[in-house]
Image 1 (spheres, rainbow, N blue to C red):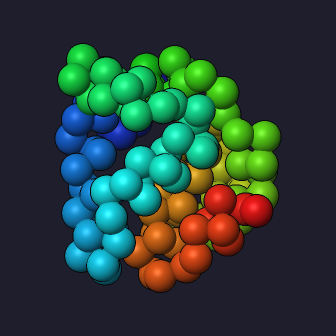
Image 2 (image 1 turned 180 degrees about the vertical axis):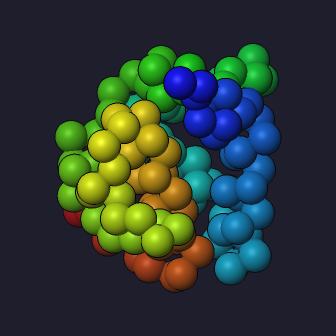
Image 3 (image 1 turned 90 degrees about the vertical axis):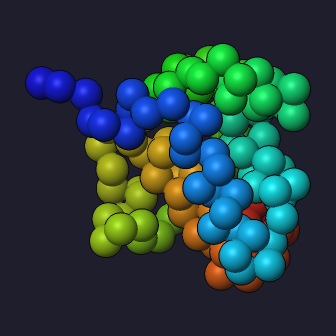
Length: 116
């Protein structure tokens, strides 16, 4: 079975879309980076390295320093699919990130987005 297209897409193409979505709603690139860091454990240098090396989304998540133990608290619907019901582990991580960015764009407070 072929891999889903998003798995092989370079992070360098996906990341700007996240930033644009946030900025259109008055949020910042720094907040997007904070969310990515919270979810994956990447610091700013590590995130930039992943983008510069044009690693695909699958490699980005495979090399993540440490997925946040509270990521299981991320619940809700993205593109009509409940993120907590996604069976493929990689797709679930992608959907978690999508959900967090959606919450940011909808104006949710960072404390709530980061499940504090």
